[in-house]
Image (cartoon, rainbow, N blue to C red; front, side, top):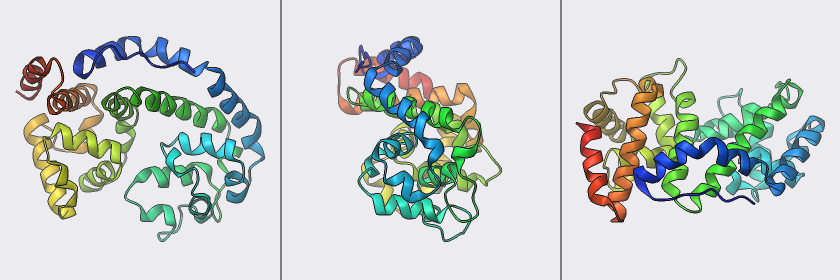
Length: 262
C-alpha cells in the first residue's frame, strides 16, 4: 500500500503535506488493498438492514467504523451492535451517552435503530462513507509516521462540522473535548498539561474558553470553522508539539509560535 511521504516534523512538514495532499491522497486511495475494501463495501452495504447484519460482516464493519475513526472497536461486536440497534432517537440510547460524538454520528449515519431509515437506502450513502473511510485511512497511515500530522489532518477535515449547528457555545466545546484527537489538538495548542483532562469538566470548559479568547480571539467555537482561525490553531498545535518533542528546528518553531499568537 502507498505510504504517505512526510519530509519533516512540525510546520515545515505540515506545509509540504498540504502542498502534496491531493497527489498523495489520490495515490493512496488507488492502493489495491484499500480498493478491495471500498469496492466490497459499495457492492454489499445496500443489502444491510439490521445492526446484526452489519457487525457480522467484518469487511463491511471495517469500512463502517473506519469512516468515523472508530476502527479500534472492530472486535467489540456486542458493543457496536448495541449502539447501532439502539439508534440515536432515544435520549438513553447508548450512542447518546458518550461525550465522543463520533459514536453518535456513526449510529445516526447507518440508521439501524428503532423507527430509523437505514442509511444504505439513501442515494449516495456508500460513496459518502467510502470517502470518509479513505480520508481516515490516509490520516492513520500518515500518523504511523508522525502522529501530529494525523491529528492536524483530522482537525482540518472535521472541525467545521463539529462546531457548526445551533448548539450552545458550551456544547460545542464539550463536543471538541469529547473527541480524543480534537482534545489533543486544543490542549497542546493551549499549552495545557497532560493531567488537565482529570480536572472538573466545568473548570476545563472555562479554561478552554479563556485560552481560546486570549490566544486566538475566539469568543464562540463556531469561529473555528473560519479557515484563518483554524490554520492558526493547527499551526500552534504543530509548533508546540515540535517544541515539546525537542526535535530539530525547535527554535524556528518557537519563533513561529510567538508570531502565531501575537
